[in-house]
Length: 124
Image (tube, rainbow, N blue to C red; front, top):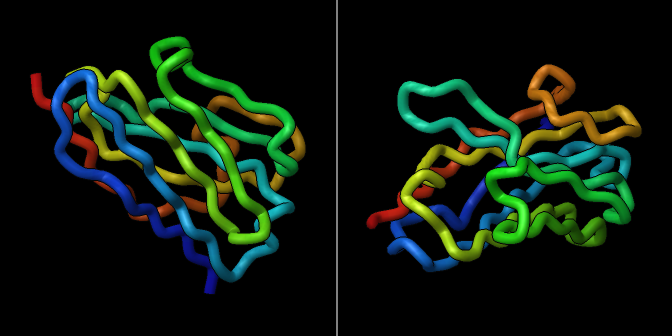
């Protein structure tokens, strides 16, 4: 059974940091581009960051560049999202996703597998 399980969300003050993790099982993890998306209340889900199969290439939404870092550990079947200098507008449910294609595509339509999401709330 294929599963993506996010963890690490929570409540943090503006300016603080959180580290999200997404543990994958039931798939050949190193064969997937991994991405993070988020959905704020009343808004559409949006791309946050993605990382290539080997971790050599990354892509970020402009709104998080310089503050968020995506990384992966293929030995642990886990992808991470380090979020620093958090802002209230970062408040959302954060989703981990997996894409079997080779290239990083910043669109949810490219991703085949999704986790259940983890809530991140940033207070002002």
